[in-house]
Length: 401
Image 1 (cartoon, rainbow, N blue to C red):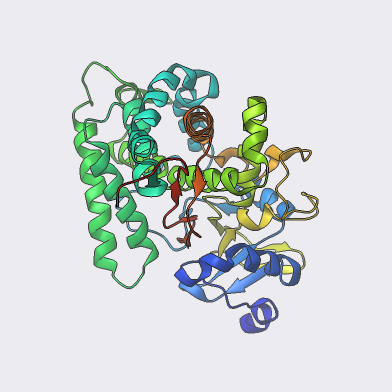
Image 2 (image 1 turned 135 degrees about the horizontal axis):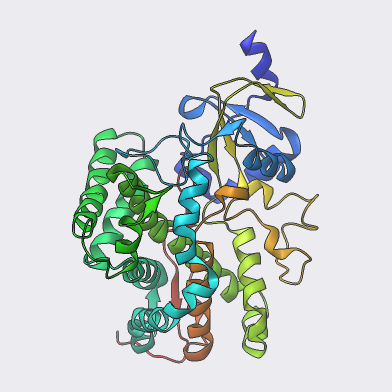
């Protein structure tokens, strides 16, 4: 009977398959057209919701679709749950109220001068040599340096970037569980050290304020602090690296876009949103059904995993006319699902957009003749999408050899 329920909707789809990257969004659009509520047996089995309305309804219905059994498919190696991403109300509400004030667009403006300095430093080699891989030489540096500065981390950005990148890679490649556990242990060791330096001591930075605060009038358990800080540094590196690179690639390759932005900087926010819609650095998140629910005539049973495929929703023609076309002037350009939807919309959205905008402003101010050198190779993880490398060159700079 269960086979009869699933078989009409079963598809060949594996979000951990590294070969998926070049055809990821084409595959999601095909699923959306042919099997909008799809079942796959990959990584233990899950349903994939691909229509914008279904995704947003599920994201808003925490009583039916919980995050407390994990918000990634498959569940990554980590000793503690991700906070507040794997909490439902009312606990989630209290946590969000505690953390969100530090990451509003208005509050983050005080960090803009430091972000600008970090970006300028990251681009120094490119300005001198005239060529670089923007992934390794710029994007790896900026997000981790920024989140480390905001939180007050003592660790060097190179090491934090290295261990968070290894965590993402190890949890995508399911062939070596020990590698994933080692990667998680490396992240958690850094986090534990940073927390232990702050708990019970006068707060001198944002992480100190967060860890010595209270939730509903009570001190915060150490495991929850670990879960929050893990999430902040992992998301602060992995998805923002991809967000920067994906957006820069769009800006450098969309005909006429760089000139248009140079003429009118007010277009930057819409251009960033449209680039993130088309090339979302985070293209899915997971839920678990608490109770039986029907979506487009398909019955989903309790305890079954459900993927909210934000990358498919971003291409839904019922929401975005001519969805494959880059159009920063489209109505509702900001309505994409790249940062999620509803109560679990990414806390770091304003920070990620600010970093991307500062990067683009630096390009416009100092590297207006930058061009992509060669065809980059896309890569995808269990929930992420980006480029393995993005070689760029300044045509007027002659390099030795």
